[in-house]
Image 1 (cartoon, chains in turn orange, green):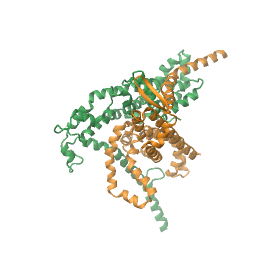
Image 2 (tube, helix red, strand yellow):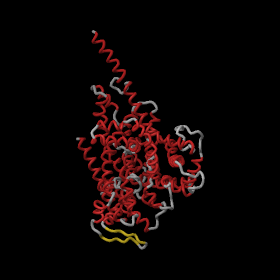
Image 3 (cartoon, rainbow over the protein chains, first blue to last red):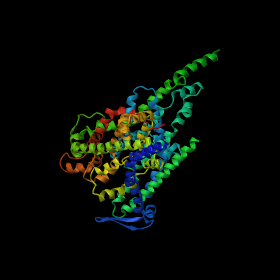
Length: 286
Length: 311
C-alpha cells in the first residue's frame, strides 16, 4: 500500500512536470538564453554580417560610452527616473480614487465604468500618442485662465515645478491607469461589508473607516499595482529609453553591443525601482 | 433652550449635507458626481474631438466659427484614410496577428497554470518564482538575441515569431496569464478531482473534462486581454515582422509617409490634413471599441471572477 502511494506520488510529479514543461522549454529558449546572450553581447562590439554575428571583446567600453560619451542617454535616464518617482504615486492614488468612486452606489455606474476602462483597451503607442496630442489641447484652457502663473508665483520653485509637471502629465496619467483601476475594484469588492458596519457602530466616520478598514485590505494590491505600473510605463512602446535602445540596435556607429549594454543598465534600474517602491510600501505596512 | 434648538437644527443640516456616517450626504454625493463627470470628460474629450474633427472638410477646419459641429458630414476623410491604411487587408492581418497568438497563449497559459496549481514536483517553488520574475524582465533585454535567433532560422517577417513564444508560455505578459489560471485552478475543490479519479479518469482527462469547463470565465478573460495586448503591440511587431506583416497601429504610426505615397503632394486637394489623420486613428481603434462594447461585461466584471487579485 505504502509502495503504491509513493509510486502514485511520483507518477503525479511526472505529470505535473509534463504540464509545466512547455514553460520550462520556453523559458530556456526565449528568456534565459537571450538574457545570457545579451549580457555577453553587452561586453562586445557586435557586427552583423551575412555570414553570421562577429563579436570583439571590448570590456566595459559600452557601459563607459553610455555614461560618459552618449549625448542623450544620461539625460533620458534622468528624465525617466523623475517620471517614475512622480508618476507612479499619482497613477496609484488616481486609480484608487476612481476605483473607490465607481464602487459606490451611483447612478449610471455602468456608463462610468465603461468610460473609465477605456484605457484597458487602448494601450498602443501610436494611438495614445494621437490621443495625447488631441487631449493636450484641453489643458491649455487651464493655462489660459492663469492657473499656471498663479501656481508659479505663489509657490516656491521647488514646489511649483513638480505641480506644474503633474498638470501637464495628467492626461497621460489617466491613460496609463486602466488595469490598475480594475485590480483595485476587484479588491474593493472583496472587502467584507460587515467590517464597515462594525466600524460604523464603533463610531468611525467614513474617512476613518477608509484608512482603518479599506486601505489595509487593499495594501497587497497597492504593491501589485505599483509593480504593474512600473513595468507598464517602463516597457511602453514610446518610452524614450526604449526608443533609444531600438535606434541603437541598427545604428552603424554603436550597434547591437551598445544597445544590449544600455538595455541591461535599464533593466537594472527598473529592478532597483521595483525594489525601492516595494521596500517603501512594505515598511509602511509594518 | 435656544442653544439646544440651534444645535438640533445644525445637526439636521449636517445630516442632510454629510449623511449619517454612511456615504449618503448631499455634499458627498455632489462631490462624487462632480469628480466622476470631470474625470470622465478628460477621457471622452480627446475621443469626441477626434470623432467630430474627422468629419470636417478643410473649410470647416480653417473656419474658426466651427468648433464642434461640422457644416456637413464630410466622409472623404474616411475614404482616404481607408485607402492609406489599406484597411481591409490590414484589418484581416491584425485580427490574425492578434487572434492566433492570443489563442495559443491562452491554451498554453491554462496548461502551465494547471500544472503549477494542481501538482507537486521537485523545484516547483523555484520555477514558480522564476515564472513570476519573467513578468518584470523588459522585453528589450531579450529581444535582440531573440531577433538574431529568428533571423538565423529565417523566421523574421512571419507570424511564427509571435507563435513560438506564445506556445511556450513566453508571449506578451504570459506570466500574468499563467498566474490568473494558477489562482483559478487552485481554488478548484479537491473533491472534484478525487471523484473523477475514482471514476478512473487520468490526470489529462481530468484536466480537459473537469478543469477546463470550469475555467471558462478565466479562459475568456485571458483570451480577451491577450488579444487586446497583441493588437496593441507595435514595438515587437515592428521589429520582428519587417515589411512582411503589418498591424493597424503600425500603419497608423507611418500614416503620413504612406499618405504621401498614395496621394503624392502637389496634385490639387491632396494635402494631408489633421482631419484625415484623425479619421485614420478612429479607424484603428474602432474594432477594439466595438469588441469592448459588445463584451464589456467580461472586461469589467470578469476580473473579479477570474480571481486576478488572489486571496
